Image (cartoon, rainbow, N blue to C red; front, top):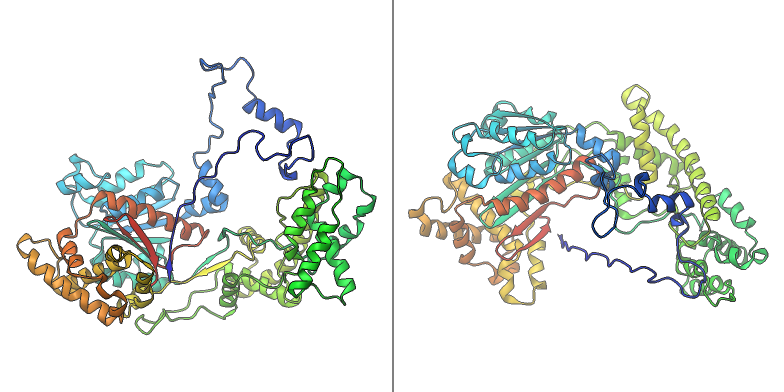
Length: 614
């Protein structure tokens, strides 16, 4: 599967007054954003400053203090206190202290990873001083692990660094359990055989692994995760659970108490659309034998009935709450039992007695299934709640922003929050029993917080399980990724497709395994190495069953570039790779957002990149 990533254009800042109704009619300001007097005063006088504070020459006030003294403030807005706590408690292992590895680790130390360990057997060379920002000229001759760990630790006093002078291959051979104690392993510039051994060890220990690579103008990030349960996946489209099809008693009473005919125009125009739909949906079910709208004609009829409830105001401004109700009418027949398929997959996986002890194919060695995590137990508790409540999950308790007066909106929030609290209590009973059975002790306070988070994000949970490195090396599934070449209309652009360069890198790996060196590192052998890489490239795509899909997109030009690169590790490419790898690492450590599955390849020649699964 190929995933295309594109940056979103920045939202245009609205000018004062733009998009607001003219003539003093109803305000479009959402109820949750309506400022009270204290908030307005705070906006005029931030941080309690008065007129005597310093001003610029233009006469405007000049800030003399930061908005917060928390250096992590901006990132906390992304992953919250729970994510920051996970980072602070993480211990990251870096194998290989070259540019790609140190750039990745730098981007983890800065946001607050708690501990890191650097393993490398090289000594700092003059070449290192030219392409690695985390060694100095005076470090030449020192162990590279020590030099880089020292400078990386200086970036953030919250991070504690350590190093070990050892060859990764020898360390893994003599101490195979070394990786078990780490939260995440980052492997930088490892040779194929060492990387495969590391992949097997990390898979057996259920330790996430990120392999990073900078090879000339090419960069690659490979994520291997056996089982990662993500509670806060934070999808682009929020799925609100409003229970309009099957309202809970408190919501139904609130809808029944809403007498639209008795309201004045202002109150009528600010009644929350959720209550409008709940009232309309109940009336529909009463008139249709308890059934919700199902056919297109019925749904159109329901929308028309909702829209017809709006009044013609003297100001001629439309009632925005009724417009919202008409637009959101589909929620009146949406089944609250249905979860997004990604969330349902996570629940199905947690329902198994243990995680399957296979890695995706026979190429991976068997491993003991890990003990159920707290998240797994929480998902099972939610499943037990659903079984006892006709398939309904616990209510998350949140409602979307809407056009409503503050009093009505807050009252509606309280109704949903109270029902969510009651559902959480019912789930907690199942959770307590499951935890005691699994661990022999009661849930801790942190366990309770995680359960609350699972109930709040029950529709956002995800389970990530990538293919193992062993499976990819033994039987790459290259055909589907190569099929994307057919989507490229311009034939001249196909050779620069990232999937072509993935195949070229795999050819370089095959060359290394057979000869013990990278192609192009010996100038006198450049021509012969090019021919050998071309042979490996043809053999690789043929063995992967993707020769027809690649067609003429692959050629000896790819082999020539691979040989010309000579396995050089350019810092500019390493910086790109390190940025991508660290982003995925934060997702894995914080268990938020959804990481890539599973390979990202950057083509610095054409400045393109793609994510694909092979």
